[in-house]
Length: 75
Image (cartoon, one colour):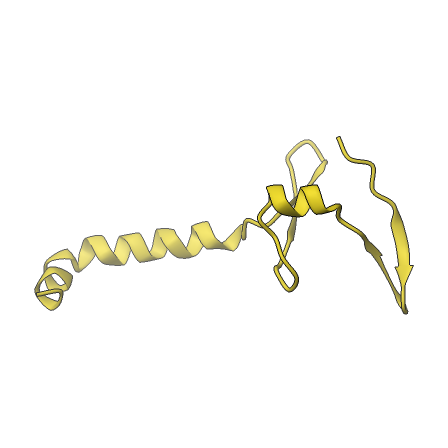
């Protein structure tokens, strides 16, 4: 468990992430983090985009529907 402190940064507030955590999450400057609420009311901070699954499911449906067409185009 990490103990992080909210600090004032200019006119905003932020949290400084330790180098070890950035390395474990494979994050660098400019990368995005997402905050999601879990069913139990807790929050999760993750580099994983929760909307990505919805997009991938739509893409998979389209790929399945047009499988033969895509196969022909790939030749």
